[in-house]
Length: 452
Image (cartoon, rainbow, N blue to C red):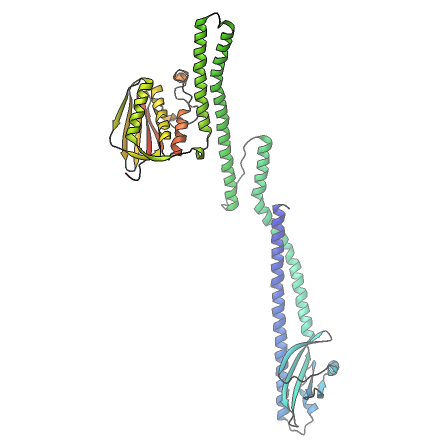
């Protein structure tokens, strides 16, 4: 069953049940009130008759006295202790009441009884007869007119209930359509996306800010995020294919050259082997960086420990100088201890050092400082710099500031993307300050250890 039909069915049933309960309570309350009123009136008539009997001279015929007080639509009689009906009178149209079985109740009774499927008010009051015996004055009054009024009320309530179902059906249908409209629109939009392959949004009414609007807005935000990620994925695949195409082409060309003339020309053999080896290393490095970037951040397995930052950076700088034969100046303002993953920090630091090496031929400056609860490691080069409009783009995968020198420097445009991933996993931040033509400063900020 569709959600719209479920809402329509459940709301309709709920309203109908509620309406029936309300009308039933109205009928029962009104019925009880009317019948109680009739019983009270009959009690008043019986007590009035008793007073009349007690006040009238004993020589007056008792039947004449009862005749004076008998209800206009009932019967009045005296019943002795043996449940024998004595003196009694009934109006002409209620003579059959005289044939009704009687009983002695020994107490005052006020109730409604059914006789010939018609409700009657029945009252029995003990009294002392003229002979000094205990008898009961019993009054029975036909309530057929009251029953007809209650039947009319019942019919009216039934008709009202049936007529009220019409607007209930209409309102529940409108309500179900209103609730399911955004869902239906979302389903249609999803089908359009599936059929056309294009990302689409749900049109949202601006006059409403309810939960349905928020659901539609969340859906649109999700589609926007999917679209951005889809475009980035397409760009990533395209750029990765492009980056892998070049070394594969070089390897294929030199392999073909070796196949044709490698045996006859030793110098060509050495050149080809060197080129193939170089391009294979480039492909290996690219593949490793792509695999690291493809990881979700929750897959970064961190082993945090207390690190004496000055010693680690000093050792890393020494290794870097020997490996690349570059001059690095280390400035240490203070001794700093941090709580971080040692291997991830080294990886992050080497990425920034490698970038400084690629884009600068001059001395690299590394500085260690601290500010409040943060340790800061900065790497400064005197290279080509980054234009201010491109500072935010350098974290994008495969993005290069110096596109003309990319092949010479051997960069893939993945270093800062990887650095950003590592920093986020370590709860560190990377900030770049650069002036085009003068150089760039990359800063790593990490939280200080709690014990220092």
